[in-house]
Structures are given as C-alpha cells and as structure tokens.
Length: 326
Ligand SMILES: Nc1ncnc2c1ncn2[C@@H]1O[C@H](COP(=O)(O)OP(=O)(O)OP(=O)(O)O)[C@@H](O)[C@H]1O
Ligand SMILES: [Mg+2]
Image (cartoon, rainbow, N blue to C red; front, side):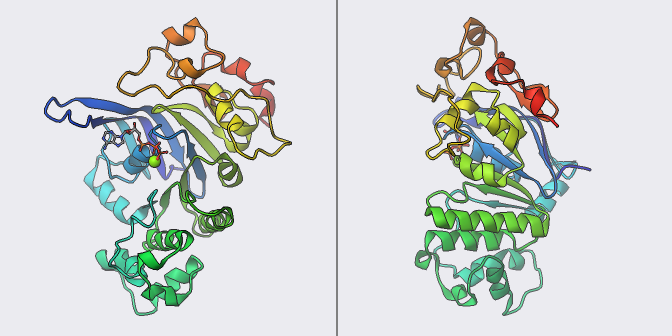
C-alpha cells in the first residue's frame, strides 16, 4: 500500500532573520524519514523549537523542502500537479485556531469557504451539516470568531479543514490552551473522524498523555532531527533514546503504574545557529560519553518498526527491546 504521506531524508533550511542580503540559511530540519498510512495516526512530539510546525507546513505543501523528497500518495510534492492535489486532499489545523479564522468572516462562511474556493456544490444547509459533524449547533453559523470559546474555535477549524474530504490532516497542537475536558472532546472528535473518514492524521503535541491515548506511532524530534520512532505503546513503555526518556519523566501526571525512573531533562536546548558537534542532545544527556560529543548518531533500526539515534540505544532500555516485539 502506498503511504498517504512519505518523507525521505527531508531537510529544510530557512533564511536567517536579517540574513537575507547575506543569503544566510539556517538548517531547521534534516534527515527526516517517515510515513503515514490511511487511517493511521502519527504523533510528532518534541520540545518547543524542535521543528514540528516547520515540518507540518512542508507536509501540506506550504514550505518547500531544501533536500530530500516529500511524497503525497507516491507523488513528489515538487511536482506542481501533486501540490494542486494537496490543496484539496490535505488540510492543516493551525496551532492558533482562533487566529487562523478571519475575524470578519462568520462561522458559516468560514466553514464553506473551501467549497466556494474550489467551486464545489453547496446550499444553505451545507454549513449546518458541516458544523453538526464537529458537534456544533447550526445556529453557530451566524457567530463570529471573537464570540467563540477556545473549544468552539477548534471545532470550527476542524469543520473547515474537513470541508473538502481530505485524505491527510495535519493537526498542530489541536488541544493547546483548552481545558482538560475540552481537550478530551477534541481528541475524541479527531479519533472518530479518523476512523469514520479513514484519514491519515499527523498529530503534533507536547502532551504525551494525549499522544499515548490516540496515536499508533510516534516520531520524536529534537533540534530538527528524528531521535526515535516506533509504535507509540512500545516507545513510551521502553524509550530507547534518553531524550524520549526525559520527555516521559517530565509528564505532569504520569500514570503511577507506568511511571519509570527516567532522569528528567535539564539544561538549555542548544542554538540551531551553533549546532554542537556530535549528538545534539549530549550537552543535556545524563548518559553522554566522549563518543557522543564526537560522533553524530544516525537514526538506525533497533527492532522491526523501531529506530533511535543514540549510540547506546540498546542499553537505554531496561529490558531488551526485541522482547517487546510480538
Ligand atoms: N520563517 C522562519 N525563519 C527562520 N527560522 C524559523 C522560521 N520559522 C521557524 N523558525 C525556527 O525554526 C525552529 C523550529 O520552529 P518550529 O516553529 O517548527 O518549532 P515547533 O517545534 O513547532 O515549536 P513549538 O512547540 O513552540 O510550536 C525554531 O528555532 C524557529 O525559531
Ligand atoms: Mg509549533
């Protein structure tokens, strides 16, 4: 089966602020290889600044890659015909839901706008039907973004994102800033939609509890590099990278049955401008050795479906990873 979305060795460089004249580029992401299938949820996790939103924007064709290949249903995004397809077949929920809605456009018009742009059939009842799909009353169509709660604004952006029946949905922190109960509702909504519509879902989040709950696979980003990938339950039960271990240790309310004695992450994220030699995590890693500061670890297979970029991945798990594979 062809993956809905595939990335092969993708790198993204962006112009340094103020560096335009000098044409200085900053490497934000590199060596990104991953795929998402129909009906699958891939979680993309990592601290602020690790490159999640940048990768998300590239995935839906808003940002060109500097190296490597991004593919949508087997076609490279560098192909204009593929990018045209992407405009109707891929959608993104932006990190700032309310900010992504235009303040002067009513909810009803906001949700049917993609249909209007692409000249798809619609009638007076369309907006109401679309709002119903995300659990909102038809009367909401007359409201404006400033009249919405955070959760309602999210639902409106979900309805808008689904207007053209996308095959791929990239959701950037879809529950950030919402009350815990509303977070659960939005997550359940996304999970239902994925199941009912067979969406391929890329879920970006800081929140491991949420990722554990809804994703099939997880990709951990650190300083623009993938440091660990694999099935969510296996990665969170037996993380093979010290950074993943640190993220788990930093979870605010870990399930006591699942709590493990991983060391928490300390220290600052190194600057992208002065990327350290060797492993980007070495300066913060409790297990770092001389080799880590000299030699950059590459993402390598540990077991079927599991990879990590750590020289000592095998010794990081308290039990051999291989035993967890059925
Ligand atoms: N347009 C841009 N030009 C230059 N640098 C940028 C640009 N956009 C983002 N960056 C830099 O790229 C890095 C990754 O940013 P990105 O927004 O992708 O991170 P993120 O993982 O989404 O973080 P957060 O969790 O805070 O949303 C950061 O260091 C950021 O400063
Ligand atoms: Mg972001």
